[in-house]
Image 1 (spheres, one colour):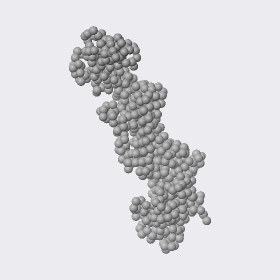
Image 2 (tube, rainbow over the protein chains, first blue to last red):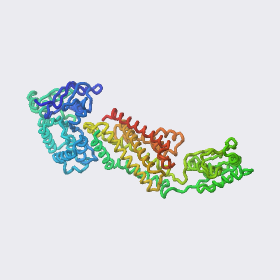
Image 3 (cartoon, chains in turn red, blue):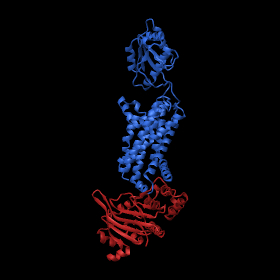
Image 4 (tube, rainbow over the protein chains, first blue to last red):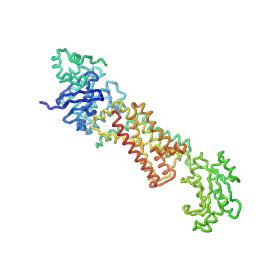
Length: 248
Length: 388
């Protein structure tokens, strides 16, 4: 049996009178590609922020890569890569400089960093534009850059928050291939997405969160079978009672 | 502390300074333009300018057995190249001319001036036998040069009159009512302003730091850095280093530009080293003010405006603008750190004070303590309430 990359035990996070995450229990295996689904405001981002060490849980505990997120946040941060939902890139740096910066912040050796930067820029089709300032990139290029900035240091656990939002179909396919390759490298990936077909296509298992609680957990096939649905979107609508794209 | 991370962040900041036009302007171009503008406007071009002071003298001791002393004193004053002596028979006329700006000072030689000098020479070692008196000096309070330059010149002439070429530190029977510590001969307005300009340029780091932090926060970049192993200490160290580099560049540019327009400060290598040092320390204070601004401001636009909460008092009360303010405002200046930077640089470059003088050491201490305190306060506030 594979060891757990992420263990969440009775995790609760409250913001004053709002409970964003409510007694969440979850285990993600090493090398698993796990989809975290839920409507807007369901508690997905809060859960990820706790796992990344950005927020302290109100109660409960969480382990990432074998490290407690509260007791050993530095170790957690060394082993994770986070691709935020918004394109957070330094507009005055070139594409290459942005990726190099995040490699250096993870204290990567120079040679390895250069090799990884070249490889990732090539895979995301950004090599030709690597010397252009990121502020001049198109939206799709920025999102691809956003992704590789999170993965340049080869993290054991990757948190990808809506990595394909706003991408054209070709770019999206390229990112899907890239995510599949991470899985082949035995990396653990937590993927949040509003695209049900994306979750169905990529994820080994998905967890659906609503009102801070885990309301369904299983592989896409298991969930479809359990709820008698044609696809994951139908499962989702049955469980949450609202359309996932209503706010888009 | 991982130096690779620190230097990576410093490199990023320096690229931002050179590539973003607004930052480039505030850090590099603004001090250059400011120095050139003030240098050309206030008389530094061509080096120090010759200045002549119009002094009105009312001799109340023009008759009697000791009159030669007052005549000798007035003669010595007339021999001073930069003084233009004008005699008045009555004080009222002299005062009228002073009020109308025709002269910059009135010197009232008392009736017992000669007697006082004579009493000194009759018993030079026994002050109890001296006839003490005071030479009244009235100065044009609207003239910065008159108030600062004339008293030491009169002191010196008086000493030469009474003692010949003896040092002025020995006791004497005659005093001047308006003492001053500044010894200046040929100066320009820019000589007074230049020390303040060094502080003035660094003050605007408050704005660039506040803008940088709020922009990075708004764009999710601080949060993104926060999920890397970079510690808060490494991040803040990088900020301190990059802003000190910015301050170093600013001081070097201001010096270069000031030199170009004719500014020739007093002081030796140690003075220049201390000048750079104190501005570098002061830059940390402005990083602290920038962090406090970024904590309070919700957006980069708001940060730009709110930065003036810290910039304006420092600018008006603590730099070259300060000398033109009321006494109350000048006293208030002692509560802003920039005042002590300007004061130290003025002592070094205008008064030619050595780096070990108590005034400069006091200024350095105040700037250092303030800078550390404000920086720590900024870090604590931004971490707690900065919403990263």
